[in-house]
Length: 142
Image (cartoon, rainbow, N blue to C red; front, side, top):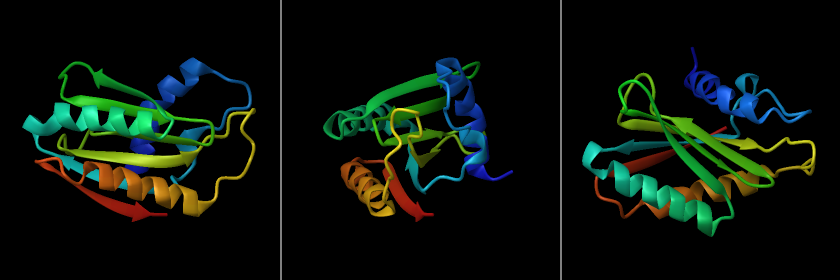
């Protein structure tokens, strides 16, 4: 199964919980790009704090939740009017977080999302993580 499908299946429960009419089923939509982040366990909290800081600076709402029972797997959700970033480190490699970038297709946000804007946000995220010890990242465009 493709990695982005696993990410979306995990996150789908959160999206279904929101249950907005007209919302896109993200389990069937390929991401517009991915940022793959490898995080050493001792650097995990700094990574999460940096994600929250990035979210605030870029007008995203950010949520990071632990996935029971092992408390080593996490779901990351960031969203704003035009874009959503969803990811997880489950199930293959707990040190590797796959963050998928998607158009926010909520019914009140129907304007197009240029790929150049997605690419710029992916680059900004990668740059924000660059100085964290024990953290590396890679952009995988669409």
